Length: 144
Image (cartoon, rainbow, N blue to C red; front, top):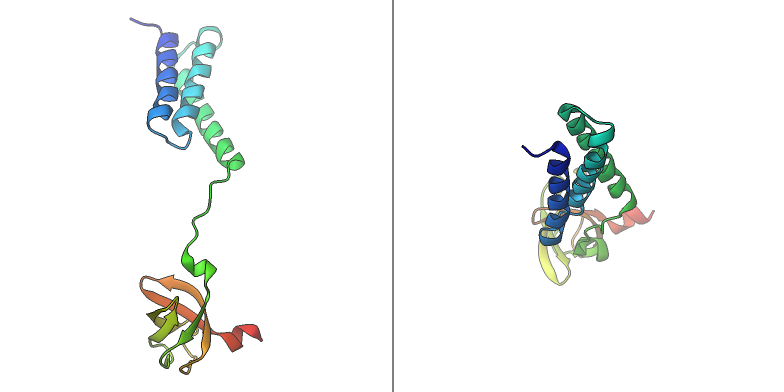
């Protein structure tokens, strides 16, 4: 029966190699590094298998959390963040949808404030999108 050190070495090497073929945002690589550390500690310090597993889980968790802290992943950007101004085509009644012209297309829109009425041909800000409905606020309300 192979020793636990050899098993940890093989598992660590396999996890590190797995990152080359199936990118996992360094999660497999970091758990592999943790397994290699446990392999080196298993002979001298960590004698029991349950203790080795606990140390591996702890090291893997710490390394993944630290890597996320120091690696900033790019944030997804939508077109709504770039073009936030639209113009109402129809009146948007209080609490009901209307139509706005946004990026050259007619969109269904609803006012973010359910008590406001937005008249037609008024500039509005797009605050967010819910499915295919844009949530808007009147330009004059946000500018003041």
